[in-house]
Image 1 (cartoon, one colour):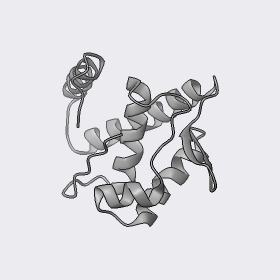
Image 2 (cartoon, rainbow, N blue to C red; image 1 turned 90 degrees about the vertical axis):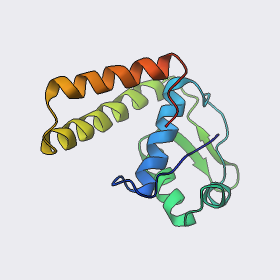
Image 3 (cartoon, rainbow, N blue to C red; image 1 turned 180 degrees about the vertical axis):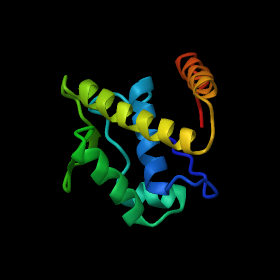
Length: 129
């Protein structure tokens, strides 16, 4: 699993990690039951503090997206309910983005076009961040 972080982004690093794991799950790049990197390994790979990765994993765990066990590590939730939980989390993310765009003066039509273009790229397998 490759996670790319933009240190110049206004989006907090833990949120970027969360978003990329959600995107990986939604696009099928991360399969249900697939083991995620350990907190320490992911932190080292992307050059961030382990607490940052831990915060992202905690958020995903509280949302039911991942299952985490200190001994076994974290995995994408393999239960049938995971897709429902993922959809709920996606809706929350979409609302945050829409609010941010509105506050930034981006029109509804522009937001729709940007989202549709992004979705098209993802579903065509060209959605790398």
